[in-house]
Length: 328
Image (cartoon, rainbow, N blue to C red; front, side, top):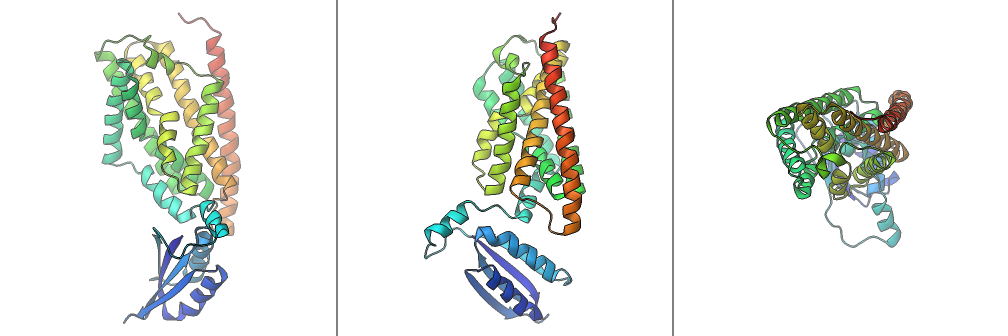
């Protein structure tokens, strides 16, 4: 459950009380009225009703320039609810605004993101070259490239062009930096291109597609249900960085054919993450608030799914065509 605190004009008390009654809020408390005529109101709301409350409050208070809505987590509430109430809480979907805030942070192209990419690239390169599985997994867990891709999926679900641009730019910058740094490492550091860890990132098949689709769906599902601990497993399962680093290492080492294979695997992972996460967001009902925004998001979703599906088919066909060709 969540505490939804509202600061609004004193005349909004009756409206907020009506919203609290309609959503069956567990508690409603009114604060003192400030000198500016604003009053705080706090609602204790079940997780499955948070989205309804936020939509109703935004629609009602949208014309008030100084109104504010704050959502606070609740660690525990006594007495405990009934078994049915606990089941509803467990299956509740995170509110749209909460998702946007948490995922949007991962789409920022800032110094912290770039430093994480550099560090994880160095870790991944060492693990791949030295064939050290534990080190490669360490780079996977850092997973700086997963966040922007999930943000892109959410941006299309909400029809948010600004978040879409940010996530695309961040993803492109991260992959470019990782590949560029890996090219330099591959050119300067002698290594055996037939190492098992490197070889695993130069092969792609239907198993790679299924794994990436399942992992992307699991990532989106963990976000919508609030099970952030699942993301650690997802990061390891569908890490984008090792294929990107392998691509750079092979280019730096002059192994063009192996670099192309690694690039295909990287692209398959990116496409699958975006495609499956978008489908999960749609199934879970993550949509904009207003009718006009929903119409835009619906059109964007149709184009998005078709483009990614066609791209995935092309990538799979390219992968299998390369497997049937002799590699010099």
